[in-house]
Figure 1 (cartoon, rainbow, N blue to C red):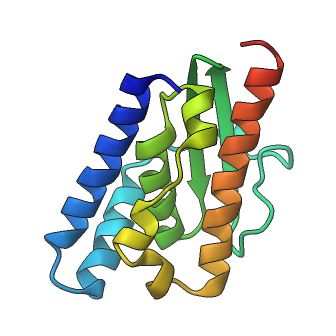
Figure 2 (tube, helix red, strand yellow; figure 1 turned 45 degrees about the horizontal axis):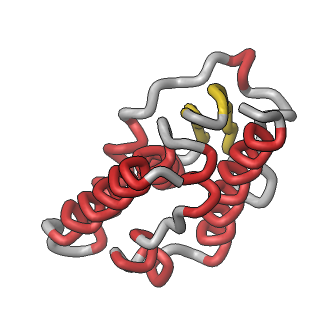
Length: 146
């Protein structure tokens, strides 16, 4: 993983941690997640396919990947407001990164801001499934040689 790519991803994670620290309580944090989710660009109906559907989530989540091993791009959508916000956080960290960075960078911000303790087990499982899907797309790009 290139040093600058990793540093950029770590900077984004730190910014997420700082943003959440400014919020007073979990009701404000949940509202912030909902607001982030509303900012996600919508997927076309043609992209909401079985192949793009993320399994392991209680809500419907679709993930679309493009790019190559040097620069992966992710777009995603959900039918649930808070889940959309969680997606937005993950995409802030992983979108536009190299496949190596996506594979090696852990989403440490999740525990740092307490999401792992405040989300239901099904949402935590869904977040883990999203991370695995992003990693699988990165591994696929690396295996294809770019």
